[in-house]
Amino acid sequence: MARIGMLTSGGDCQALNAAMRGVVKGLGNLGDQLEIYGFLDGYRGLIYGDCRLLTSKDFSGILTRGGTILGTSRQPFKLMREPDENGLDKVEAMKQTYSKLDLDCLVILGGNGTQKTANLLREEGLHIIHLPKTIDNDIYGTDITFGFQSALEIATNTIDCIHTTAASHNRVFVVEIMGHKVGWLPLHAGIAGGADIILIPEIPYDIAKVVEAVNHRTSQGKGFTILAVAEGAISIENAAKSKKEFKEYKRTVQWPSVSYEVADRIAEATGCEVRVTVPGHMQRGGSPCPYDRVLCTQLGAAAALAIEEQDYGCMIAMVNGQTTRVPLGEVAGKLKTIDPNCQLVQEAKQIGICFGD
Figure 1: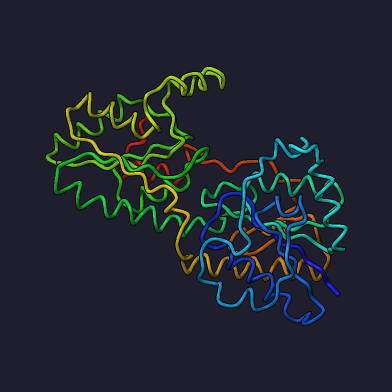
Figure 2: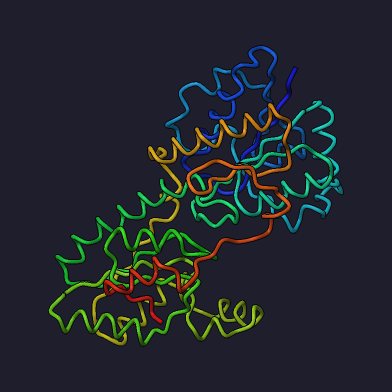
């Protein structure tokens, strides 16, 4: 009898169910010799033993369903070694749950924080397989993460929709796209949506250059300008601050996010009418796009094969169009950022997109 545990942790995305389905269908040849235990609400379920035995019916019809049938929660990695409010050792509790159920393997779906905890459990002796999930596409060691393409379609559609109202009213629109530490999503959505200015965390912006780009479009008779701004975009002044100084700055500012600050600066300097649009968690919602459905099926099948071969302690990655197993210890804690000099950024600049630098 093979006993497999499964959990989804961190922020949700559109293709978590599709990935879990891929794993289970990939293990279908085990028939009634397979038991799948789903832990509810991420690592919280593993810590407190909150799980249920799943059947093939649970994974039927979920390929196109967004979110996660298991639920999810954020359990910060930096707090994993700290006891809970009742003094419970969380790491020891997870190990005990794993042992009590006599699991052969734990399949963990999640992003960077989730991956670090997965690696911690690997170091503690558990058999772990990680599937890379995040709309930010910032997991090191894989070319793409599931959730990214689905979120990209929503972010791009937002910019598409803004075009008509921006042109009708001759306004400047700032569209805030998710991306706290990296800018893969706003970069791709900005290019795909025809944004005129793209601001990402990897390229600190000079607001004077941003204003100059807006004024240049106005001087050419173009009545509107669209900015795709990462939620983690940062000015050159703030980028020069220490972490402590930047935290102090954020406590004193009047704006709810950087997009509103950029909007106010532009309005003040140009006299243009500026609006901010924040699609927010819409970018995580809805049905997974066809690309993600295929990707998750591939990753799930590859994870199933690794389980059958008892090759644990790895992340199932997509590299050069092929699924591969990457040791967790080599990638956990690393972030895949955008090189400001990469080809895509340079090509975007070649067609006139401003990055504020």
